Length: 111
Image (cartoon, rainbow, N blue to C red; front, side, top):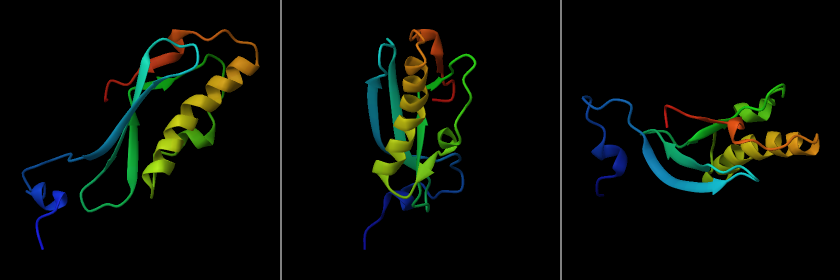
């Protein structure tokens, strides 16, 4: 049996290893910046995690517990968590009559 990606990055000298699986980009509703979502896993871990280029922060809006999910066992569900963490609060704010603003998007410095 041949080497796997996990084997190639198993050297103890390496730190903070992430194995990227895919990246998706989109614009959210009427907002201008392009948002990117990366799906990845850690070596030896089957859980799929996501990180996003931007966070959504709408003034005076309470954060849902759903937005705290950062992983899943499946790529599609992990991506769905990332998308819903952005679309649900955005749609709620628009439904309340708020005017979308690019200032709602905060760049993720760790992306």
